[in-house]
Image (cartoon, rainbow, N blue to C red; front, side, top):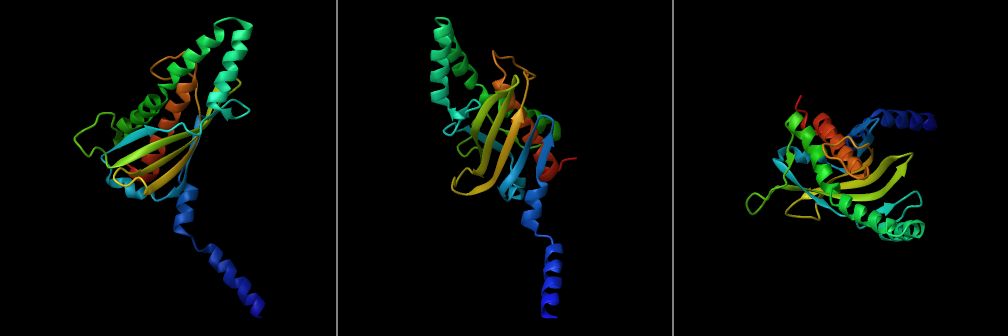
Length: 213
């Protein structure tokens, strides 16, 4: 009898929703272009945001199917291409260094396009006053590689209070891919994956956090 009671109690507890867990399970945007999901934190705290700042941190970035550190991968690629044709590897390195500078701007452009459409807080690229935006986004790209000609990006994003960087409000994970469908065109499609990451984050923010429609 006691055993049956425990089983019944367990079944009842399983039916009781846990707000935090439920929120994490539901806060996800997925489409054919990629997925963004909440890993941890309470993004509802962001509802008073007027704008965001954005920082790029590529300390953990790996490249290629073998997931090599970006410096290792680029060095090997340069040597490999130069063996095939003198100067080809040097051109590849210049192309990489050039397009890499567009990763953060393309993420911002992808997000701000959705933010403008849905009247969300924008990522502010201009420093207004001393304090600036109340919240900051930090992009941590982990892996970038090509799959049948399509760039695949795996990335984490932290949002914290600009005044206290130890206070992480929310952490998201991304799987984003893209073709060169941004406003700008580059020698390769890598920046488009960052543009798509910003795009799907804007859609998630509209649906689950700011709910402007």
